[in-house]
Amino acid sequence: MTLAQLVQLAITTSILLLVFSLGLGATIEEATSVLRRPSRLVPAVLAIFVVVPAFAALLAWAFNLPAPVEIAMLAMAVSPVPPILPGKQLKLGGRRDYVFGLLVAISLIAIVAVPAALQIVSWIFNRPVHISPFAVAKLIATSVLAPLLVGVIARMIVPSLADKVASIAARIGTVLLIMALLPILASALPAIWRLVGSGAVIAFVAVVAIAMAAGHVLGGADAGERTPLAIASAMRHPGMALAIARLNFPDENLAPAAVLLFVLLAAIATSIYGSKVARPG
Image (cartoon, rainbow, N blue to C red; front, side):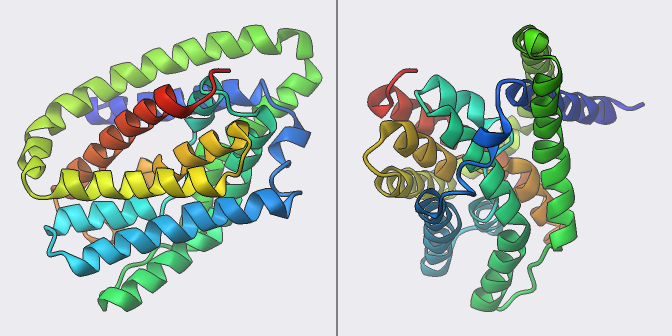
């Protein structure tokens, strides 16, 4: 097994463990809470699937951005929340039922919304960009829904062990993820540095800022919902964005580095937002 394969295996395993650990702390009622309440679902869909992609498309249309920057920005803008996001949302005071319900609802809607958004992008920019609903469903199922559901079911079967197992799984998953990401970040730094002066930072920060503002406004008066939605709107799924980039633009070697730069900027921006606005939980 090559080093690249080991890193990929570590990332996959770490995400499974982290999402499984989150599932061990959730219930079926919490996981389906947003789906059962349109008053919660509609604002989330508007923020995540309408405002953010629309603003990213406007930036790409209005400015002559380098191809890798444009690809990463649009791919991230149409991708749903990352699977391990609930951990951050809960630490910043998010309501458990809303945090888990938002993850499940947005993940399910993404199966249809992501291919549809790419069709619109293809029409606007007159270039073929696509991903099949099956590919999105497979990624969502393996990285979010399956490990989360296993965790929820495990908690129902052995509730007395759920918290202990969740803690162990989360620690192992976190260590694995850090170990896997460090070599990726180190190898990508030269490419990321090349993108810094290309307008990527300004464009990505603008998208993240608008995303957080949209989630903050549409999240309503309850900080337990407003803060998680603002963070979810800004933090996108890099795995899906990379899949879109590889499928449609295989020759753009800087696109993965641009996606990583977007992730780093979004992580920093949402952490600052959380420290200033969120209600510690």
